[in-house]
Length: 106
Image (cartoon, rainbow, N blue to C red; front, top):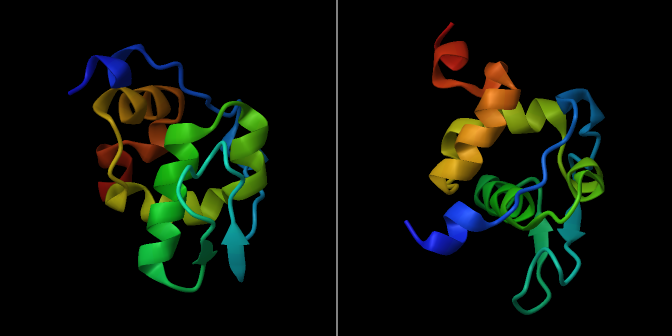
């Protein structure tokens, strides 16, 4: 794991209930969340959805970024599929036990 991933400050919401982002349609993320060429993520396509959630969670600069683009129910559904730095995944699971693998198995 890179030292950057260990040292990077990650944004987290206070509550998953605050995640009220879109659940359908195409979404183009702002440059501070998606550094590549402009791309419209199709939330109806599982691969696009997972990729968008990974990018938003990794690159969010504030809880507002998370509130604007993530949806609680969708996050709970795709969480096990997300490829995230270990430190970031641990921080989210420490704050939100419902994201832990034990909660998903229950």
